[in-house]
Figure 1 (cartoon, rainbow, N blue to C red):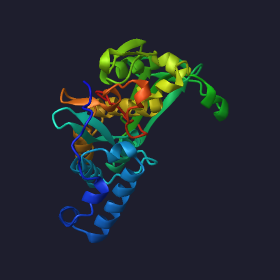
Figure 2 (cartoon, rainbow, N blue to C red; figure 1 turned 90 degrees about the vertical axis):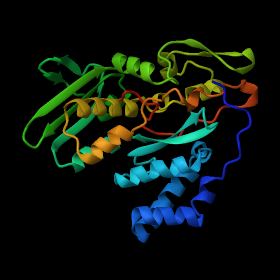
Figure 3 (cartoon, rainbow, N blue to C red; figure 1 turned 180 degrees about the vertical axis):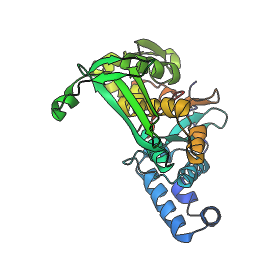
Figure 4 (cartoon, rainbow, N blue to C red; figure 1 turned 30 degrees about the vertical axis):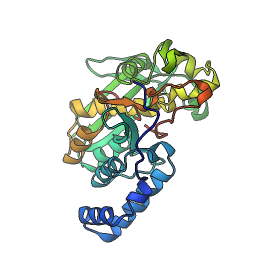
Length: 304
C-alpha cells in the first residue's frame, strides 16, 4: 500500500488549464464565455489554495469541477457544497481528484428540486434527547436555549428530518456511537479504536482511538495520521451521512440530486487508497500530504 517514492512528472493544473486545448474544451462544454471564465477562475483559485489538490492529475480535477458546475455548485471550500478530494490511484501511480458532495450541497440540491418544505440536520447535545421511537419516528427533545453553552456540550447523536410541501414527513436519528461505527466501517483512514499501523522499512505506528483523538490525547507530531475528513470535521461528515441516508431511502430525488448521489465518491474501490493511508513514512522523513481540508465527506466517505 506504499506510495512510490518517485512519481512521473505531471503538468500542474494551473499550466494545463491555460492551454488552448483545455480552454477550448471548457468553452465548448459550458457554451458561455463569461460562465467559462468564471468557472476557470473559481476552480483555479480552489486548487491554488490546496497544496494536496495541486499534486493531483489535472484531468481528474477538471472532470470533478465540471461535474460540480453542471450541478450548479461552487468549488469554494468555505461554502462546503462539494469538494475535490485526493485519492491515490494505484494503477496510475498518482493522486486523482474525486468529486465528493458536501452536506450543504445535498441541502442546496434538495431544496432546489421544489419538493421540500423543510429539510434540516442537527447535532443532538447531552441532556437534550428525551426519547426517540424509530418505528413511529416520534422524537422528543428539550433543546438547550443557551447557544454558547450548547456549543460546548458533548454531542450524543444526530437528527435529520424533511417535510414535503404536501405534509409528508420523515425523521432519522443516529447515536454518535452508531455514526463512529459507520465511519470506522467505510473510511479506511478512520480508526474507532487504537491500532498499530505498519509503515515502510518495517516500522510501526500507534494510532489512538477516536475518543482519545477528540480529547487531544495523541502526540502532536503524529497529526499527519489523522487527515481523514472524519477527524477534521466529524459533524460535517455526520450531517452528510444523515442527509444521504434520509433522502436516498425516503426522499424524492430530482435528476440533479440523482446525478450527485451516483457520482459522489464515497467508498474507494480496490484501485484507490485514501490519502491518509498512503506511504506512512518515518516521522523523520516528514509528514504525508493531507487531503483537501473541509469538509464535509468529507470526507473519506461512506455508504454515505
